[in-house]
Image (spheres, one colour):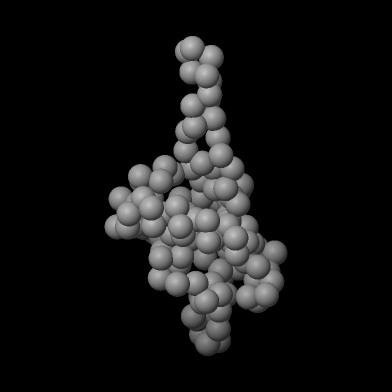
Length: 118
């Protein structure tokens, strides 16, 4: 199989995420490095690609972080005049919280053919 696709834990559907949370979480999983499960899109990029406002991105990422789906690391770089300037945040995709049936793997996926025995 080839093309633009990504895998995500099937238990995500048991988590009770609203549509915005599901969309942003899926977007972050899609963008994440497959080894470290981290990514660093800007709020503007997330908003543009998901078709939502920047304020909605802030609300949703805070909610996902509060629920344990992601952790967000604020990053800074030094400017020429020695001040700190905030850059894009680093998002860590966490294993699904166990109260939702999550396991140790973010990418605990099974194809339909595996489930149906095909």
